[in-house]
Length: 452
Ligand SMILES: *Cc1c(COP(=O)(O)O)cnc(C)c1O
Image (cartoon, rainbow, N blue to C red; front, side, top):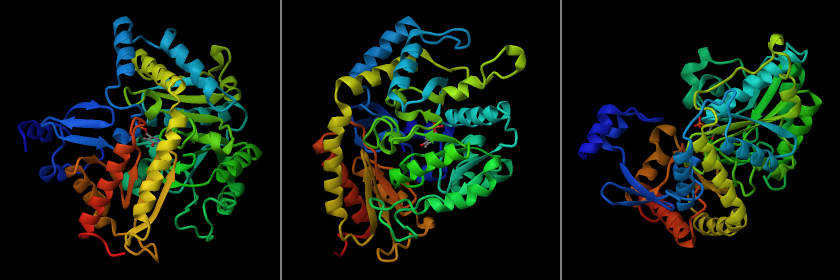
């Protein structure tokens, strides 16, 4: 362990980590980044196949974004956002509203994804309180959902690993059994099904719809659950259902937004508009903390009144609408527009799919390789035929990722799922290295080349 690593262990409590693991596997101390690569203090190079926790879009230390950030820092670093505003926020709000699904007309600023979710929940609740439906006090969420780590966001999540211990503190959310395409109980295929599983949602929510203010979902990919991909038709049905029962549809596009699924926003593929939409992560191309909660005009209007009526939305964060973050987000949108990013990604996505499918086929421990746009996931199973998962205590995904790191590939597991979510600056060479190295790590873990 180097002296920096020793100090890291002495003073830092890292996120989402059992710190005891760091004693034999200390933090990798990164000195600089360039494009899709990170370099540690000893000069060792890592390909960032997870976009540094799903945030990076156009590579590390991107020259275009660096320039915008430097320029903004020399003008204005921060200003209070109540009663004050600034050009980068105004420009960003206008551009995002024009790009977002139709009907979303107002942008509320915060500084991380979980906060954007808190804002969405509070807005939805308060809307119903102020529009004559005070009995609508509960939220619904899908099984395996993930919406962040603050208490409100955890309440609408369904990943026990993160929430179990806090259950006594959490909101009384209605859990709906959602799509599970890899192990579809209806025996359907995700590309041809009619979202037969939607009946489960109806069965749960119809009898208690009068209590429900909103349902929050991750459109098309339940990311933290293991990049669980489900078809757009589920979203179409959900949109109709929510309209019929006067329930807000809250789309959490924090992970899937900004091109990850192939379109700028995942909702586009279902041709739907949510009532509220949460954005963060890729919003600033992986540079700065920032989030937006977009709301439909009707929601905004329910708060718009004389002050004494006490209808205002009084939520705030110290760093709401930070100008550096907003300026970087604007520059990122310009890159999308001027550099044909989504079109170029189609070729990269096809290449990633071909490379990974070729190696997954017939592999005894790969239950499924699934991909949508620039997100690919390898689901490891103990038994291919029965799809029996590995016992979580074996930490199969974690162990494989440690081997991959030694080989210069930054992967992170989600339980038994390994996933690729590379920055959009990867080329064919990087994709080949990524897939080859991931499979080398898998095979090394299982002991040599697996039998076919
Ligand atoms: C990461 C994530 C969040 C939480 O965002 P943070 O910035 O980490 O608080 C919420 N929802 C989804 C779908 C996410 O992937």
